[in-house]
Length: 389
Image 1 (cartoon, rainbow, N blue to C red):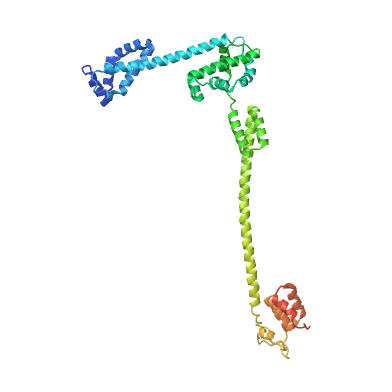
Image 2: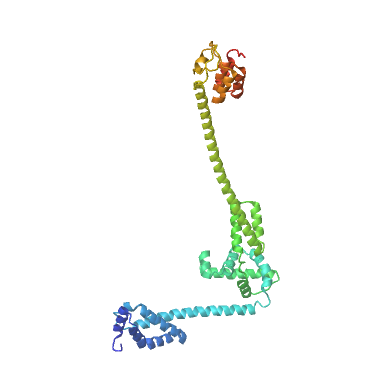
């Protein structure tokens, strides 16, 4: 590796990732890079950081340096760029440390005679006495911790104008405190406000406030808004309990509304089914009534025909419907024979009328009228002829 040129070592490392080639490059040039970094940053520790950064960049950019015959020029330019970044970062760090030290001095000197306990009770009243522009400038700078650049963007002005507005507002705020017999310098006032004005909110306040505000916005009821106001003033434990209760009630209300909607739909479905069943029952009843009116009279299969001879032993069957159509016939059944027929075939309207017409027994017609008052055949028979016993 000692006999290789820088260009050959870079090619070997770029193509094959050879660690020995890269180590040789570092060995050859580390003193050169470190010496340049010390001159640039004037600090040995920072110079070490710059040196390491240069060789990290070399490893990352090796494939782009294959055609470069002289590597020192690229190393020096890279060290210069990194050193400038380190110097700027160090300057910013030192500035912040200086500001912090100055703030501590202000707190220990200028504000020694006036404490935050004296400022806090009057601060919001004093802010309210300022005009809107001055109040906005103070709130942006010391309560929301905005820089002059950020304030300029928000207010639509230059950073210098924004800072001047802040300085003017601080002086007017200090005058408001002077009217209340609280004498404090501008720097001390700014230090106290910066250190104490904004405090961390309790852990449960965020969730409780979001829940309460959401409920107030959706229900828009006075009672809910009053309850929300009281909730904000409660202790943390009370806020958690009230929030849980409100969430449970809201969930229960939503569930009940959902159940009521489901029950309403079920009731509507049942009502529709009942209406359909009622219509079907009416149709069936109408069809049954019409079929009963058209039904032929039954044939008494085993009832003997009576003549002037005794009934016993007569087994010749006859058509009972023929007897009914011949009202002048002398054929009649006895009461016992009619009862035997009814017991065998059932005491329907048709059978009762058939028995009545062959026996002329009024009790059979009365039974038919009592059991089947709406039967058209029964009604017709009741209006015809004279019943004989």
